[in-house]
Length: 314
Length: 299
Image (cartoon, rainbow over all chains, first blue to last red; front, side, top):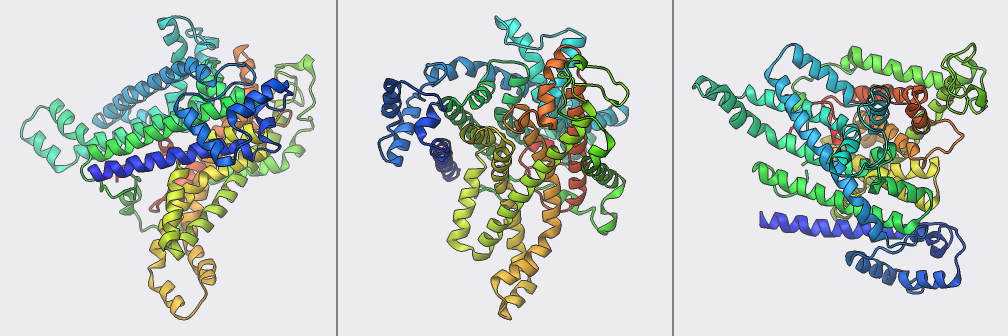
């Protein structure tokens, strides 16, 4: 186990180094010189140029620049936004909360609603089960931006239950504003988790050890909880974890659709306005989060399920 | 951690290639053929210019010669949908073709040569998984400027590891079979064995994976266009239309967004269904775990 964890930690560091390199190398891959990319094609006063050259060490060799950039990033210095003249770290910090709450909210929906529907469908064959199977098959195919449009059209414009745009102020208003985005982000993942829960719980219920437990007179609810759901938990948790990881990149879609002031929406805005330091900073933060969550899911699955061979990915 | 649903399904095998598609698979194939035909002959069906804007018709209801009405800039919706079908189908086609070609070449080389090359390739692929396709596309758009080509290239690169991982393990298994060894003993060159025998024998797996990936590529490309980083206005594209129609949704005119979004969903479902049918009993590799619609077990 220790050897496995060390191996994963080394892989994690290597992956982070390489992906940070990719994010950094974008500066040099761009047509024109790095200075033009950093300024987004704007003409800058000589003092500002001097600041950029100093900050990015543009006069130094490529790898010195990269090392300098990574060292600064680790210390929390991600450079300056060329459009807002503010530190990228500050801009990221003020928006990270929105994205984090959105993903946590969506993850809760995926787990609670997905597992509930899947469990009910598994235990109650018949009409409800068929409805879940057909319903999830349709919802699973709806990409988040289409889900966002439909939810805005139905719940914000037609029924006027919830706001369509903006962050809101205060805790409860914030939750109200996050509800439609979270459901849009969670929709297809919830359907997928429901399907997986249904399949794996039903498979477990047919197993000998569960049948034995039932025939020994152990209460049905206890059998479901202790014997069926616990064994079904590994595939459910793995899928849910991978799903949360994917939401890190996809949160941009719903943030953009619902006008939320989050990291992803800001990444899109910055890419459109060619504010390159911001694009680099947010891309670095999102990739790091994505890699971390994926590693946690892998390690968690290995710890939950003793059958997983610790040699590596098959 | 790779999830292998193939083993769960293997027991149901035994049907021939012809019966593989089933009614649903045939229906999905029908939808795809219909979409391709409509995209190809679109201009014949409607006389309206997809880019001709007449602001007096903004959000106009269906009228004679304009069966689906108008968008927020007074452009004919039907002709925009039909024109948009071209970019929306050709974009993913390029993504799948490019990533398949690169992924297969890398995987076969690694599997054939083996040794340190195989280890290096596997490590590089492992790291490439760290970059979600949509994120890479945004980074590339920031570097090279927004546009369809940059988005297609970025997504193609992001898909390579999934294809290479799948093809590599399939090629390794195939390589151990006696017929390949027999060819090697006869002195056939590695290139000719790979091109003439190995790849053709992997074709069923490759075709199934390509079909599945088309649905992923379609959604990802639509997301990038939805951001305004892919297909640029005034060119029509379904992803761009979903995003562009959003102000209409807020004003109570959801037609543009819903029609374009509906087209995307229908085709994604069709490609996904067909891919699932083709890949029944065969290994697959997918970027977005939750769109897997079949049984899943942790391996």
